[in-house]
Length: 338
Ligand code: PEP
Ligand code: MN
Image (cartoon, rainbow, N blue to C red; front, side, top):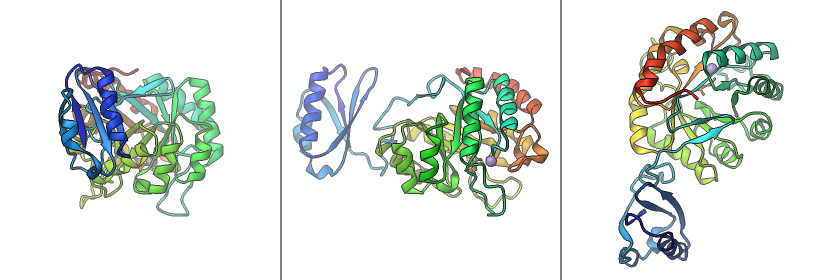
């Protein structure tokens, strides 16, 4: 349920309504727009005396929210969310480019890639230290050692960093070394892990589950936000369909649907969505055209010998070309890379 205040209501009037709601044991979330203030109400609404609230001369209307997700809902929070990540940010007018290897392999590899992606304009270095691989015999990641290399790369380049976390133990380690945590597709509905990253104090990139609906995805975001962390970005990375020409099917309509339904920033990952290097650029452009706030792209110094996701990884020249070629699309979207 949301309570829409009349335009220009004084803060003292807003506070009075909040006190009334909280006196019933319900929680409130305040959203201050340019014109209107919205009070979001979470909890057992049957306790709420709606006619009394509506009778306030400062209340415009009380609206029921039918969706199960509230804090990630645009009705609750009409202004788009943006937040800082290290020296950069996600949301607002920024087009945030995250790039780097699927997996951190060696310190030298990571430092070389960090320098290259920075030179081409990326502001967040990605690199997996805990790899959720389909086969237990595939490279599983360097774990804490890999996180240390991420920290060294951040210190050397000034780039912000993002790393996937696959367990509560990984969260505990990662918060010491990186600027942002990633929840991978396979863990989108690992609710205990979502609560952990909700308490971790770093921004979170929540990737869409392999077969998750948008509703399930926004409920997963709700777990993180309701655990205390409002700095969540959603990452469309393709979903499972009958199509086999690409690794997954990039659901571009999801980007537009999310923009309508939620205030959270949306990142498009054309690398995992397609699994095909040559498709990264066209789908990066399409993602930007659909309103994405950023891109996540896998880049490797030697894709043919990458320990994971080589076929979708770009080499440095290819990444640089993509960065040049997406610039007109970024300008058209009225954003800039900062
Ligand atoms: C990754 O980012 O390397 C990754 C494993 O992605 P996803 O969870 O989208 O498969
Ligand atoms: Mn990968």
